[in-house]
Image (cartoon, rainbow, N blue to C red; front, side, top):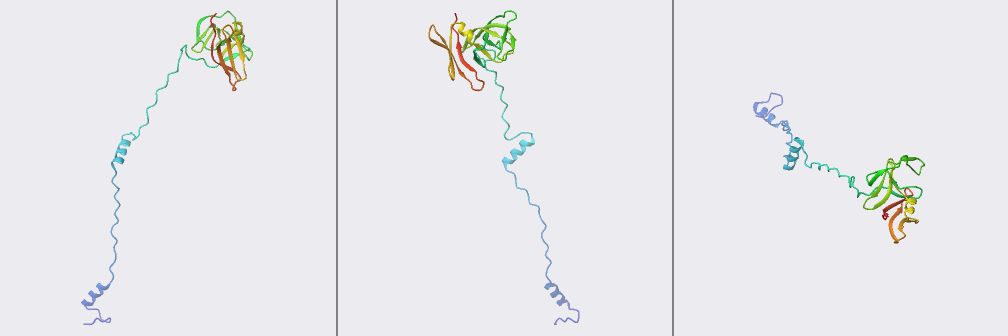
Length: 198
């Protein structure tokens, strides 16, 4: 029987109309992506951090180096200068002095600035590079000063050049000391000086 639009459609027409209507699309439910499985290396790092450790622990702190030649007579005193204006040789530290004796009462050392510092004792500067007798211990003196006048009184010849200096024993012709001019402070710094014992 043909389907008519005026009368209600028979059951077979209703089924056909229902079949002809478009089906409604229902999207599939969204699934959260599963995290990638961590590798063994990542698991190891995470495990270390949970325990408060690190994959690359910092290197252990180096032990402090002991001071070289601390208190040793073989250590070289710093800043040994040859001074033509000093009346006597002097040093601010007694660490390198041997055969210490009491200084004459009231003796003072006159610095280049004109101040007078008291002399505490007198001894011999004896190290691997230096041997100088009658050196004054003057606390507060920042350098070790070798007096040119004292060397010449002992019979030594002191020669100054444009960049270097030397101390010679005229009786033997032996050079017993050498130094170089330091542009930073304008002083001749001795590298070694071994005054012959009389």
